[in-house]
Length: 391
Image (cartoon, rainbow, N blue to C red):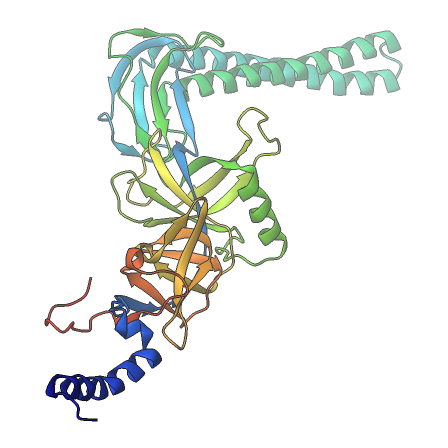
């Protein structure tokens, strides 16, 4: 049978396309035109030696806060300080007119002298009475009377000396001195005014607060308290020279926590309304940067110092209430991995559970990846084909 030229052409075309058809059966994905795996940026899980912290808002209070009051009455003569000045224990801050008290001291000294003379006379009479009684020159009753006068004279001396000592103290109190080292406030009374030293109505002259160290108070939640107490029992936390657990403090305008102190005490009663308990830290303050009444940030350790995995914030995804990362398998498959997170450290987040140090995770391009699918990994800092860095 003679084939027509058109039929011969069709047969040749079918034979030529047969290898292509066989190859397409082996590679259905390419025949379907599937896109290549997405390009993503990956990075290893970092590991650092660090401690986890709980953050609280605290307030600064002075260790010593004194209302300086007059101890004796009189007219104020002079003020010997400037408002806000740093003063030391024993510095004279106010002077009260001393003349009344000098006169009172002189009167009591005279009374002491008189009492001393009476005592000397009574002592001589008592000794003489003993001799006369032995020779039966006086009666026993007279001897007892003279001995009683001696005891009375001795009591008179003691009373006069006590009055003199009190007058001497009053005279000393006309120089009003600082009872502590600290920063003095403004003078609340100016010279020329009468100040009262009567107990219960003493005139307040000024206030003084200690500067170094200071207390920082914070209200700690119950969960943090339980962790902190457990770690303290286990002696798993860093301590200062006094054996106190170290905490870090920062002012509202400071970056980080440049002030380091120690936990001085923890309250003994949990507030049922707030579920918190007061914690007090004592913090060195040599430069006076922490001022009484100021708000401060407190960082309290809630884990021992240990090697801890960290991941970048942008590598974290959210699946309803669950946080996750995509971990790169050996065959470049992105695997879903749920993680339990801790607090932030710079631009990284602590991972308490879910990943290990050194594992590769997807950092950028998370939205282009389906868990279980392959990706084209690219390390951070590597150049793309177009020559630009991946972000």
